[in-house]
Image (tube, rainbow, N blue to C red; front, side, top):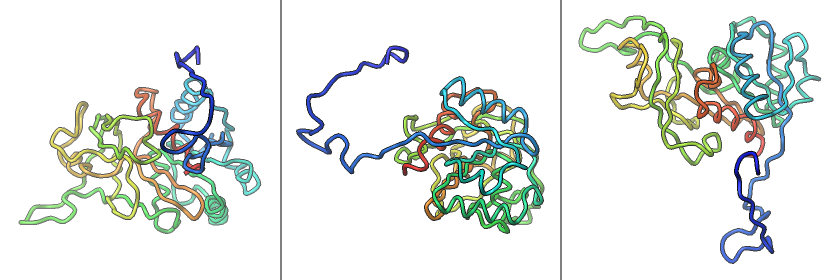
Length: 266
């Protein structure tokens, strides 16, 4: 309380004069999760390091760094949350047997959190990990009036205005609007069936700063930045980009923290 300038006031009773009483079933009980973060091949050293700093230095949250070769069913059983940082993921990165074990673990209450290219891997329809899908790299997707569809170019680095769904647990403690970083040619396909706590704004001012090609900006406008899906008793959380990148924005880091701490509670 002293370190964070929080004023603590004692109460004489847990019962309220109005509204829910403290500790009643109207409250969500959050327990400290056991967190594992994938390290080594295929993870980007930068992405792992940024997340390491965010969790250890900013939030003092313990986690276990674990290599792909060690991440079997027994290891999964020792954690509540598995984070896959950005990296170089492909169709053969994980075996079919391991993906089956991962899905079983999520179904029992585990939370899978993915950043950027790990999110692209997770949306592969063959994995059946999530209903989320990515947009094709062509724009316009459906050419009209003779306009030719062409491949969009990667966003080298741009800050986009994003709209926030304030009543979702992933955005708790944040603002109604965010500025988020995009540095790839990845775009989630919009879909009403998945929760979209953060979405890139549809306004003309969506790219706030940085450099982005016009076709690439149009392809991204109005698409999800953050997706959440219930998977039986567990959760899958997908980030369009790396929310801990160089620890630039604490608002983005808060989204990552919520995805790690609150998934099992909600």
